[in-house]
Length: 184
Image (cartoon, rainbow, N blue to C red):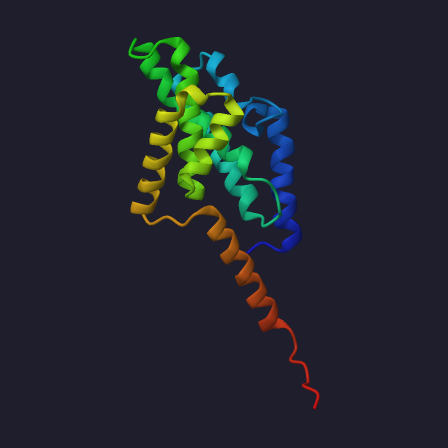
């Protein structure tokens, strides 16, 4: 809020350009897609940095107030979280390499459900996008556990936050507008 409107819009746009040049994997469909993480053998630290960078860029973009999609950033961050969990488990021999995709899908369903609070929609969306209908029990369990945890932590669903932001902007505009004379 302390930045003027045009700067608030230009800053994430400039960050996007710099990240596309320096670290395109953070930008999603341009660099790295959700299920491509299955085949990457990145160290845990690199996955953690990738996830932190994605979350930081998503926060900067979201804070700008410009309309834009949040579905793909949520799904990509969820798959990165799944990859972050899968890497040490795979290296320790607790998870077979072919099970990595399952953890990516569970991460996507979990983060989406925690962010939006619609576990059934999140599970169905992720299973349909990934073609992982055979994972239905695990995806549903992850989605409901994530939504329950987010509710227990009293974090606001993302769309409720967006609605509050829009209503607050309208209130400020009305308060700043000069009063109009009422006609008789």
